[in-house]
Image (cartoon, rainbow, N blue to C red; front, side, top):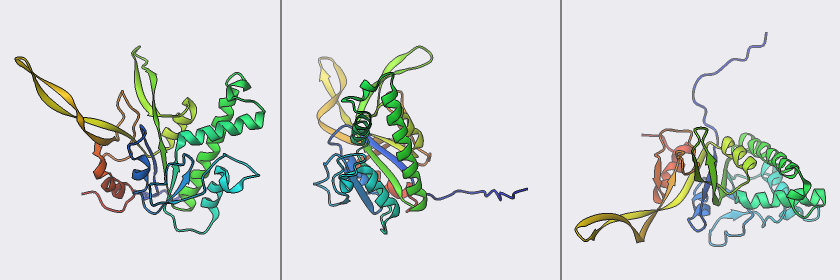
Length: 258
């Protein structure tokens, strides 16, 4: 009989993180705070950051343009000699556009829906499975954190109880969105939180949002109105943007929880 030698105790591994929210809230800046990052740049919005990035990614896979395609860049991160500790993919929703464009090209159609019966999106989901497999290999063999950034959108959530409501989630189609969220250790939703003020209205006082003052915060715990996830209960439900560097240190094992 094989002796598998089970081991007890915590295992310190690189982490998988999704940072998502509306445009202009500093998702890429927050991603750049992770240890020694290298960016796969798909959106072309990194010129304001002093970061190390790959050539602008223009396709998912293209034999005629090896420097500017995602698959080749991922292969470089996996196999080349380097000391990067974090791979940032900026952004997941722009990567999905490249995946769908790739599926259209392989099937000689203008739009993925032209493939019919949802098969185009099934093919795209299969590509995302390949991406996740490759990223898992990079995480384990190269000991690298994997960080995705993403824009957000609202989707309808139908509870089995019969209630239906809108919720924020990463701006992806249903299958890759579910696959990525399941794969992640942490999903942080970034939004503007208005600062409330009390105003006099006749004989009463009312609390209203101050339109001139607001805070950018990250949420780590799922809520009926937004998708979020965390692997450690040491992380607060709500994190001020300026405090996120301390969260990064904690979840990447650069510091011990107090």
